[in-house]
Image (cartoon, rainbow, N blue to C red; front, side):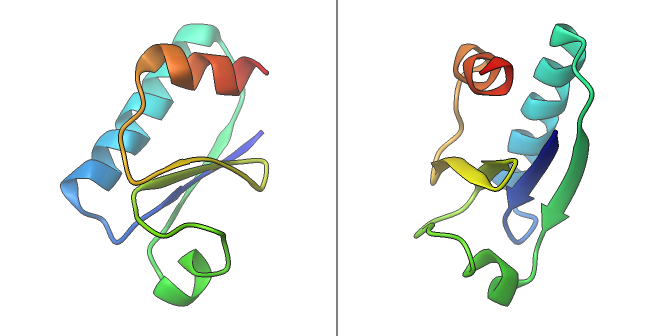
Amino acid sequence: MLIKILGSGCAKCERLEQLTREVVAELGLTASFEHVREMDRILAYPVMTTPALVVDEVVKVSGRLPSKTELAGWLQG
């Protein structure tokens, strides 16, 4: 599974990555992470605000921090 965090590196972007890594570890999943900070690459996705979470090229959330329960649902699906 490829997980991308879209965002410039702000506190919320870093927190989204941290939360996602925690959930991946708790679920015992294997995933590789990429933090996309370049605006031209972020704009390639249908997101209006960051941070955004992309799992296997599907945007799961943007503009807010999801709960761990939400993250677990998306990552297990």
